Image (cartoon, rainbow, N blue to C red):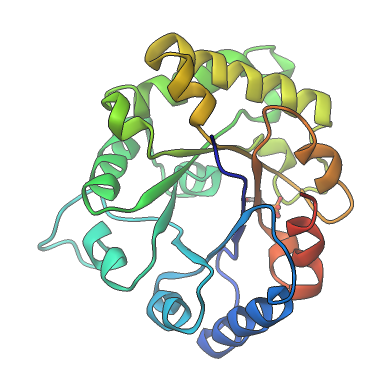
Length: 248
Ligand code: PGA
């Protein structure tokens, strides 16, 4: 059966010392609790090794290169990420797509390299406000899924975690309603089932992201096709992140 996952995405926040302290504090705060989900923290590249060695919680990078190695100044490969002990990599985040021009074709290459290095991609998809208003949100999400992921074998696809993040809800305080999120998650699962069959689709964890927090996590996570969250703002403080984790 699919896993429940709550993953934090720090984006470009926290210096190294703050990051390591956060990981230790979070682990200590969760120690006595019975968790109904896996917990992951998505850190900047330079934190990965230190954070991964100071916690048993899952650790995610927020990006990786679309090349194996070589003369690509400033890039960080999937193999380098894996060598830090991080097990996950967030790919296709809307901020990468919007500010750094990442396309479905580029992301397809990154996903293949992440998988080849044993990393679990947390692959982000989601429509903009304009696309939802034009009523093309299902088409957009389907295109992002098909174009970047449907080249994979069923075996490889089974290793992917999807994060549905409507762009209009990210960092805006505007959360999709649980009905809107559930509707899209069910559509994504159906799209996966059409390509890979029901078993693969039922085993795929699909997370919701976009202003999820301790106040709305319970309702979102209660939806049958929502298997957790990718959390930005509310993952930056231990006291705010724990109520999200406890949404399960
Ligand atoms: P937010 O970010 O929770 O701050 O909206 C979510 C994300 O970008 O993954």
